[in-house]
Amino acid sequence: MTERLTGHTLLISLIAIPIRHSMSPTMHNEAFAKLGLDYAYLAFEVGNKELKDTVQGIRALGIRGSNVSMPNKQAIIPYLDEVSPEATLIGAVNTVTNNEGKGHLVGYNTDGIGAMEALKDEGVEVKNQIITLTGAGGAGTAIAIQAAFDGAKEIRIFNIDDDSFVNAKETATKINENTDCQATVSDLADQEAFKKSIAESSIYIDATGVGMKPLENISLITDSAVIRPDLVIFDVVYSPRETKLLKFAKEHGAKKAINGLGMMLYQGAAAFKLFTGEDMPVSYIKNLLF
Ligand code: NAD
Image (cartoon, rainbow, N blue to C red; front, side):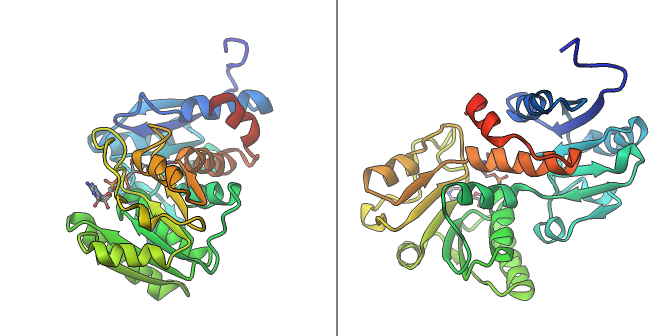
């Protein structure tokens, strides 16, 4: 590392809290080293309170770009100069570029792209497909919007009756107004409608985080009759690698049971391209970290 970091090294930041657990610094720094790019990627514990000063710091120091995670994905938008059409529709930014350090900050959202690339990597196309999706928070919204842009035929969102339910309704309206995809929202409490929807779908995506601590013993699908050999099941959680849902899906013969590692990798790869203009060596990173 001491040989690699010089007076010329350019910095990419990651601003979120908590963030020390993140795999992103390792992923990006290994990719920079592999390609011989003179960048370093560092995580900073930043919450909403420090956000304005942090964004000024990015401009002042000429930091070349930044990833943004919770709780800053929505809060950063007013401080940016431009926001991409996808990130505007999603209402959240996870990647910021700074044109050669000159201070013009543009926000993007690569979470949805990451999820779509992860599915493609498994040979799963969303075009013309009916998708049942649980979760309408940050991850669920990004996935719904990107899947709609990528040509999904229908997205049926099921959410519990909490704050995100309103968000689900807004997301469905945006999809119906801006794409050819048809989006609907239902209460997850209507289990018969949920099962019927999955029966009519080729892909079920769980973007709730259920399956991760402290909900590691819960799966939103509990009826084995729902699992079919032509049903793809995708859970955005990657810790644990195999959630209760994915274990259940495998045991009952789903076509595929995919965890969130690929989404993490490909959202990072899309950000890497925006930061450096280069393709992340994804196979190398996959072998190294996964
Ligand atoms: P969020 O808090 O914004 O949204 C959570 C969603 O889950 C909401 O729709 C909420 O209504 C729903 N929900 C919460 N508890 C539930 C329950 N008990 N039953 C049913 N639904 C419930 O969170 P987020 O930022 O969207 O993150 C969700 C998950 O996605 C997290 O586990 C996060 O780690 C993961 N994630 C993964 C990646 C990746 O690259 N793989 C990227 C982003 C987020």
